[in-house]
Image (cartoon, rainbow, N blue to C red; front, top):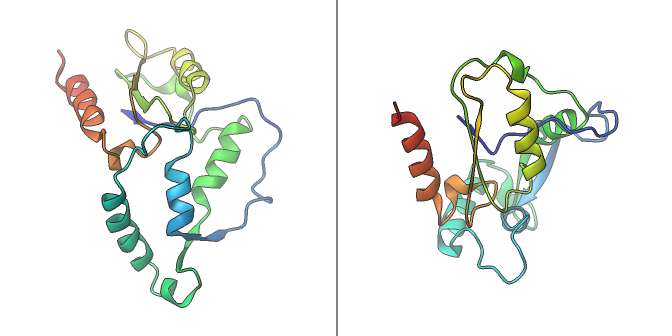
Length: 164
């Protein structure tokens, strides 16, 4: 099961030097990140009330967040470094070594896992019995597990795991 996986792209050289080891991220930064890829005029993929409850817990994960203006959490840059590495042609795994039925599942507005990324992964997984399957769910972005339409994600995963 690969939910919103990062795929290899043919970008320039990586090295992580351009990405600091951590950064400060406010609730506003997170809100904008949740909206990445969502077409203009569409409702946000996450309910405001759910987001703000999540954001409160997110900020509380850094005991010093309230001492900053605006309040923000210091977060490690691991995901950004992983994106840079993968998009520069270096994945941390070899897709040809995957030998089990595989579902790639993602939201239609996912700015991290594009159609081209999913297509590349499906083609790269040459040893998956019957080929890897790509399912793109409507009204979802990269954090679909937290979004309003998350049940579609849960249903797609459940259906895949219970097939014969």
